[in-house]
Image 1 (cartoon, rainbow, N blue to C red):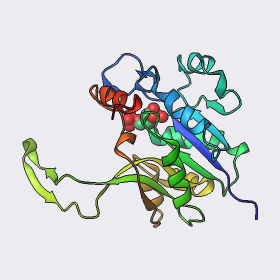
Image 2 (cartoon, protein in one colour; image 1 turned 60 degrees about the horizontal axis):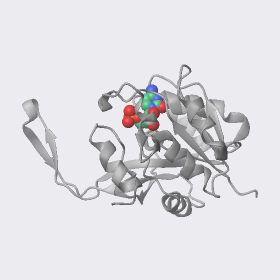
Image 3 (tube, rainbow, N blue to C red; image 1 turned 180 degrees about the vertical axis):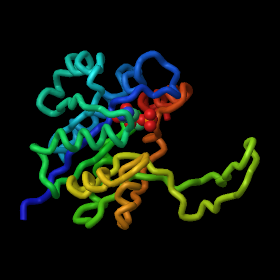
Image 4 (cartoon, rainbow, N blue to C red; image 1 turned 135 degrees about the vertical axis):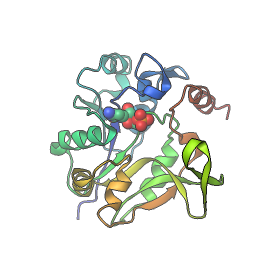
Length: 232
Ligand code: C5P
């Protein structure tokens, strides 16, 4: 049997309203380069990754400039210009567009452009942990804080036991055909794993790292910078 290859798929459409910046957040410069380029560089440098795909908005006015300043990525990265209205749609559109290059049993690692702290070691850990797995899985972090669910007016309605609670990160890694089927059937999902769970399957949780957090709010950019400059 030919062994499965690994492909990266980076949804990089949308604007990231919560950052409050004019530029879409995936192009915000962190530690000297746009966030998207951190993720592209990390995947492109990994010998485990056969090829990298990035899904951008059809009207994207930034990605070409980013890539023209990164000639080392030529031949390693393909831009797909069919981003959707939601992350879910962008990933599914990307899967359709990469169809010709990818086999049904090949692995796809879906990774947020907004997580510039991913490392080669984390990619390897995920890929190794899921070698031969029937379902696939994701990086995630065990929750350490006590969790509260709010009712009205930010008043605590319940304390949710944190035992066995994990916060999902990316990459989320599933075989091409399974992931595509899961996302085609899913409604209102915010990650790939929940679409796969809706098929009755149980993705594996692989411990990620705090440095792989998602840049969402304005103050997150400063924290990401500390990790990427090696200060943290
Ligand atoms: O906005 P949020 O932090 O949830 O975005 C997570 C990832 O999904 C980012 O990499 C963003 O570029 C991507 N995304 C997308 N298409 C959208 C919305 C978000 O590819 N319509």
